[in-house]
Image 1 (tube, rainbow, N blue to C red):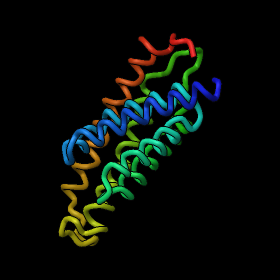
Image 2 (cartoon, one colour):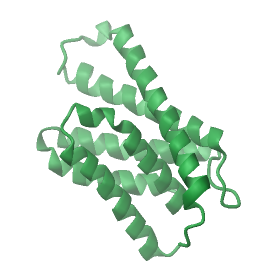
Image 3 (cartoon, rainbow, N blue to C red):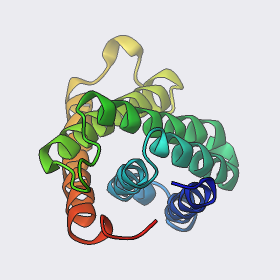
Length: 175
């Protein structure tokens, strides 16, 4: 893929992440993690190696600037999420072969990366920074399980959506 096309796709997908973070107020925007997950999965499929990392980097900068109070957290977690998506796509070999992706591998990659980023962001923001009054030794098991469950469910839904969109509509787009 040409460098200009790669930059265009990265900018387009990053701007979608920015729009969902900017125009939808927290905490509702945090429930839209599935939208961000689909975008990052498609970034890896379109751009290839490190596609989600590029989109996470640019989307994290834009989103971090739009929320100055939580800017560093927003940037780090969006960027880290992109890195995790690329990492799990490589681990589970979920890249397209002959234009088609294996749905279950994409679902597994997105479920793992979303569960990890959900738990890490919850622990960092709620427990470590003490925004919620919980000491690290009192890491609420029920809340932790809920965060992992919702993160995994969102990742499964996003992985399915990304694989479906790619196999049905996007694989034939000439780039």
